Image (cartoon, rainbow, N blue to C red; front, side, top):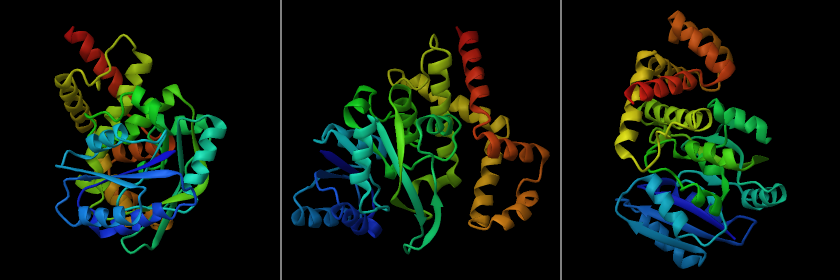
Length: 327
């Protein structure tokens, strides 16, 4: 059985559409566990309304504790062997669960994503997100922060994730990316070709807050953590949850390093560049000199386009050097 897991905080605007998209799946053997994470709008009333209509819906309600802790609580209270994620502002396409569970069981995968379309606030199509399907390419994309399936589009093995410790509480953002990296180290990962999720792009979207900078910083924390786990096993994982003080130092170290190397400045330019040139490929080329008006920024853009993450390896070595000098 699958547990579809949705955590919502003040998501009344699109919650009806998200819930209905799950209830209308062709695959029927699931429970729908909805976590109300301290919403102050009508989200809880909407959830209760649907729980009376469809007995597959179960819900928990608590004070606001954040997405990461809410998802872990949902996993712990789930009955399914598999967890499928959906966010309150997104829409699952009808065959998504059916195709994902078939693919996961056929190829013995621990994590399965799907293709997605980006839609706007009024359900209008904006663009496609085409992500790789084979394990080797997925791992390459993960390691280099290149295009990968969204959090709201995955199905994963619950017991595997519980063994890995679930979502790491230290990761207030990019908690999905951190988990996908850890899953890929111990299990095969895949993607179905089906467009299974419609991802809603809007100004209040979590990944868009702070111009996406906090998301970028946490993503680098996750990737540096992976590099240290795999390249320097003698060094303690800086995101190990048994040492909260060390985690705070690590995040601060990452942020300062990204600032000093001009990477934060690059990400700010990249955010505004994408915002202004969305869906206009020719316009992008013309506006590159306007947004990336320094040679250092142009170089970073070229490295980003070709290789993806160009800084985490250097950052990992800098952290290891810092730890060894401290000891």
